[in-house]
Each structure stands twice: as structure tokens, then as C-alpha cells.
Length: 236
Image (cartoon, rainbow, N blue to C red; front, side):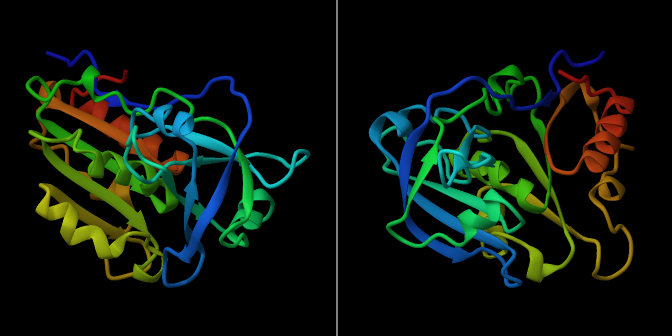
């Protein structure tokens, strides 16, 4: 029997620009290519973030090209900040990585439906697989810290090149204490498996009781979805 809802994805919608201010900007990986940026947001913005997996569009000027950045902190309707994980690259993302405390940034409200785990209830789909590569760990981290995975058997496959390129590596023990088995797959360290899609083992998987959340490179997500569907996990 195939599951009705197996693979959860996020989307996006129309928006009106608002503003946030930078509270802090610190390196999120030892190589300096990833930045953890905390933004102060207003109450309306905070209330708009209801589900892990949502994201904001950000720009540093009115004529700037927006960058799509997932929220790395869990939803908190009474909160005043969002934490973002930003990968340094040319364009807006690089400009954001150069911002300092007190700087103002234009941002959309939280967008997209996020990871609606109610579509795969824990009592029907107790086995939950999380897949992420690089900065794609950001919304997965929000999901883990939100408590939405309580009562599930959770395994995270997180692919990076090496520890120095890995965000939130200091939180792995915390995640495991919360019941998440962390499989850190490193493409430049040790032997096989070297990529996330190589690490997954579907031999003993019960597809009818399994759901998955994927964020990352297309090559990885395509290969993992193919493997999951072959094991009986249906695509949403």
C-alpha cells in the first residue's frame, strides 16, 4: 500500500515589502562562507511565520534583486527576531553577508506554506527522513527546533563538503538528544558514501509508514525522490 502523502515541499506567494534591522551577523561555518544573521522584526512579521520551511525575500535597496532566504529559527508568534542562514555569493546574498548590526534591510513577510507535517501525521507515518545539502539545512533546522517532529523516528541526512563548510555542526548533539539521528555525509572526507543520495538505504524501508522532507541541490533531491518512490513513498 502506498502512502497518500510522503514528500513535503515549500512554496511561495505574493507579498508586500516590509523592513527588518540587523541584530547580529556572525560566521556560521569555519570557512566563513555561511553567515548566521539575526534580524529584528515587528510583531506582524513574527506572527506571519507559522510553519517551519517558510522563507522571506530580502533586498538591500529598492532596486536590488531580491534573495530568497529560508528562516532558520523556529516559529514564535511572540518573538521579535528571525535567524537566517545566508551563503556568501555574488549579488544580494553577498551584500547581506556584509551587513552590520543596526543596518536596515527590506524584506517580505514569511512566504510559502512551509513543511506542513499534518499532511503526514506521526501516527500514520512515524518514520521521518530529512535531507539537506549546504545551506539547505536552514529550514530543516527550524523544523527540528520547532518540536513538530515529536513522536517520530527521525533521521537527518546532511551533506556538506567537510566540517569547515558545515553550518550548525555544534548543534548536532542537541538534535540527537531531541531524538534526531544525524547522518553527516561529507563529500571531501573519508570514503563512500560521499553524497546524500548515496547514503540512503531503502532496503528495509516501509514506504507506507515513511515521509520525507528535502531541501538542497536538484541532483540530490531528484535522486532521493526516485529512491523513495521506489521504496513505496508517494510524492505529494
